[in-house]
Length: 247
Image (tube, rainbow, N blue to C red):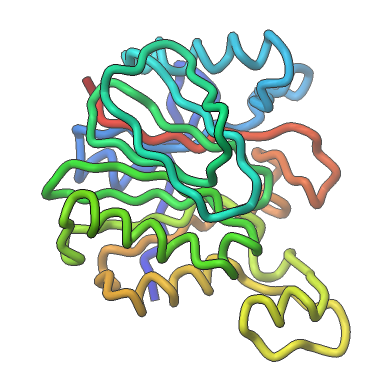
């Protein structure tokens, strides 16, 4: 069983940093934004100029040179970025994960119940961020991430750390039998909750990542006090999961 990981609040923007990683790996920034103000929640869908301004505020306040967003489609394609990107970059090609070994650039995905998966190679100093809804989990996006570490950076499994961030929990995420079938589980007769983070934890462990390198957020986007946007709750907004190597 992975360790339950806590979040600590950052005052510059409505942002929770991943406390354990921040202490263990001071060369990275990792965490997730949250709603903040009830009257003007910190929505990061990038559908208007306000959201773009907020993204700019994030990377500038964190002391980074830029931030990269990807068009997410619930697939398994991954992008790799060089270190010469600057400003707010929104890729044209769709992907559901991205990685970099270059400093000064924040990687971002947006979520509102799906699992943000943070990964790093502590030896080669590589960071990765994946967007894992049930389709991504079923299609093996975590496998693709570990394969990318191995093929691109020759990573050793003992050097890989994985954190499963705030997402809808196994008590709240009720799905139909077709989702269970796609996840390789015995389908129930009626809609039943499923725990995506538990499945991801098992997948990561089966790939050979050490159990003491896997941590899991205790926060549910639906039932943990309303800090986060939740699609299941009817929210249209999105929070941004972020990771980057400090410049």
